[in-house]
Structures are given as structure tokens and as C-alpha cells.
Length: 175
Image 1 (cartoon, rainbow, N blue to C red):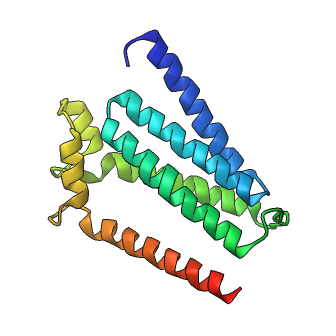
Image 2 (cartoon, helix red, strand yellow; image 1 turned 60 degrees about the vertical axis):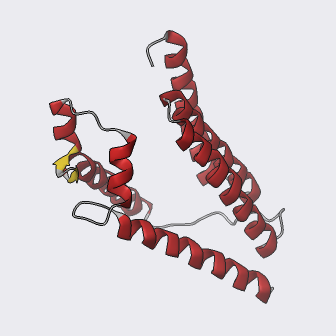
């Protein structure tokens, strides 16, 4: 990312990810929200391609923008009418929810930068030492079963997705 065109492209894509994410969350029409989510996922794939992770960008498009979005749209069409609008949310504890969300984000960022992750060192220590973190290192951390490796949570997420799919089929059959 050294040329001016790459920097401009990055900011355009980053702004589009932010805008489409907010639109996906705030839209009252569920099909529009799914479409905005699709644009968010495609914009994220553009960032991967720009960083030189072609395989990760292709997986983002094929799995998330393709497969998961088709699953979402089918689930939406099987469970409700496409023209239905969601009722406005009424909350008496909006400030509490915002406060808890901000606290959660701060805790996640602290955990990201200070928890030992790759080879037993934290992300901050790796950045300060100048150690190069490759995709192979990240892949081994995600799919390894040793200490500070994340195979079990990775598999737990896949079981969660499977149970969501089964739940969607059960809900669709009851209608």
C-alpha cells in the first residue's frame, strides 16, 4: 500500500464498509439489510485483495458473500414476507446498552493487543520486536490444538453455524 491510488482505494473501501455496516444494522427492511450486509462482505474482500491475500479474498467472496448470503436470503424468504417491515425498537435502557457495548469493545481491543497469541507473545510485543507475522503463522494459530491455539473455538463456531441451519430448516417446515 505505497501508492496514492492504493491509499485512496483503501479509504473509499473502508468508508463503504462502515456505511454499509451501519445501514445493515439500522435498516427496517430485512431484505435490504441482507443486501447491505452483502456489500459489506464484498468490500471486505476488496481489502483482502488489496493487501495481497488473494486466497482469503476469494474465500470471502465464495463462502461469505456467496454461500452465507444465499442462506440468509432463503431463510428470510422462508420465514417472513419480503415486504414486512420490522417494528421500531423501543428501549428504555439504550444508554446502558451503549455503555456495555463500548466497554466490551475496549475489553476486546485490550485482549487483542495484550493477550499472548502467536508463539506465546502478544500482538503489541510482536509489532515492537519487528517479527513478521505471516498467514502461515496465523493459520497455525487458528487450526492448531496446542497451547494458545484456537482449534476448539473454531470448531465450536462451525457447530453453532450447523445448529443455526438446522433451526432454520425446522422453522421453515413449521410454517
